[in-house]
Every structure is written in C-alpha cells, then in structure tokens.
Image (cartoon, rainbow over the protein chains, first blue to last red):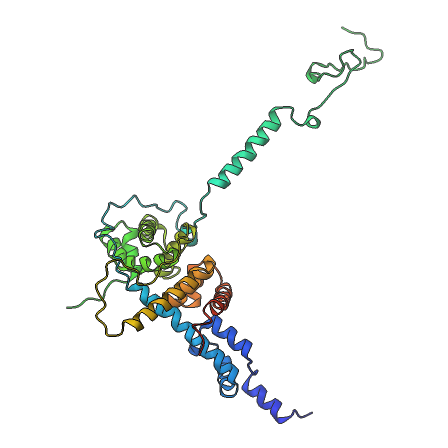
Length: 174
Length: 182
C-alpha cells in the first residue's frame, strides 16, 4: 500500500512542531537554536516560517534570554570589592585519604546542612527507649509470674525457683 | 618567553601536595567568580564573601582527596551553591546598587534609569524563584554553564535541570510579562 505523498514527505522531514513544543524547547535550552537537538531545529524553522503565534512566542523567549543575561552584567558592575588580602590568612591542615585511593570525590562536598535538629531527634528517641526499658512505663512489657502464695501479684525471681527432677524408680539414694 | 598558565587541574594537583602558592593562585582565579555567583544567589555581598572564603577553605582542606572526575570549576561551584542554598536567604540585590556613586556623565540619564528599573524587576523576579530554580537560572544564564555542567554543580540529572529551567522560565514569563511584550 503506497502512502500519500505528503505523509512520506512529513516522515522524511521529521515530526512537525507546534507552539507548545517550541515553548518547551526554548524553556529547556534557551532561544539559541544551536543548543537544540538538530532534528527539532529544522522543525522549529519550518514552524517559524508559517505560524505568527510561534514567531511571537520565540521573540518573547529571546527577549527573556537577553533580560536574564543583562541583569548578570549589571550585577557585575556593583561597586563592592572584596577586602584587600581577604584570603591571606593561614590555611588549615588538609584532610588526607584514609580509605586508600578509592574514595569517591562526590562524597567530599556533600553538605547535609545543619544536623542539630536531626541529632536532637535521634537523642530524644534514644532517651525514650532507654527510659522505657529501665522503668515500668509500659506494664505489658514486664513479665508477671503468679504463684499460689497470698502475695501472688508481685514479680518473682525466677532464678530462685528450683525444679526437682522426678526420682528415678528403683534407684536408692546414696 | 611566555609560558602557558597552569590549568586548574594542575594547580589542584600541586595544592593536593600542600603547595600553598599554587592554591592561592587558584583562589585568586576563582574568588571573583564565586563571589559573583554567591552574591546573586543570596543577595548579600558581605555574606557572599564569607561563603566564598569558606568554599575556598574547603577546596584547600579537601584537595588531597579530590580527583579530576569533573572539571574543577564544577566542583567549586557545587560547594559555593550548596553553601548558598543552606544559607539564610536575604532579599535579592538591586543591580547597580551603590551608595555614593559618582554622577553619571552619560548623556541619557532617563534611559539609564529605565534600564536600572528593568534590571531591578528582573533581579526581583529571579530572587522570588524557589532556591534550586534560581540556582539553575543563575548558573545557566549568568554563569554561562551548559545544562550538563549545571547538573554536575547541582548534583542532579540533566533532565532534572531541564525541569527546573522549564518551571523557572514559566514563572519568569508570568512575572515579567510586561517586559516581554513585543
């Protein structure tokens, strides 16, 4: 079955682009098309040649790029300068590898942020567990042994209980 | 006879062996860049300088453990960005803010005032972005890093950086709509 000619041409030229995709590409890569995937660049050029809405969206994207870069240049003109000799102080001791040569560089600059709140939470949980273990806060965790004695509700030292083995039949005690 | 300046990686290799002059040369090279980045991220110049000092101290301290898996610039920017993101935010700087500047000798002060106001609005819009979106915009558009380099600095994937940029630009288009009218 032969395909219509326009379908063949579309397949050769690549998937056509629409304005939302054009906007997404400018958001992702900026309005400089040299940074775009080559196949989508051609589709964008065809869209810009035919669609006035696309032309307007692309012009706004280029203007936004320019504004973002201009404010960087303006900030560089600030009169603030670092204090003279700001890095002239003595350097601290360096940290050397202690796991041999294989210590991933990515671990060197991990910054976990302020840890005090997490340390405090960990300490609180540990203290709570310690308190629960030492005291009788949760009664179900304490083993209660009852006997026939009148004071049967107190915990009994199990180690004091002696289990007598049944005497062997027919054997005289020495 | 002119000599090629040492590369960042060569200086770092010597700094890793305790060579202080090499490290100070590297620090001189990167202090202004780090200062500009930190200043834009946190909006306070004095605190930006403290952050950059801290970042350079970390570079020196960890130099023996660093290996060139990525360009030095990416690692250094990552340290600066992490310190900035953990730092308490201040309102964004107004561009060209300076007390006691000399009188502007250029012939079109009205145009200059419009430009300053435009830059102030853009800086405020960038400052209003969430931290990581703001970092992505500053690294790509103001530091000139590629999406891949920005991903290395932010310790994330390229697709995550692209998502940050899409969200940031969508927000900036909304807040700067008046400036973007053609």
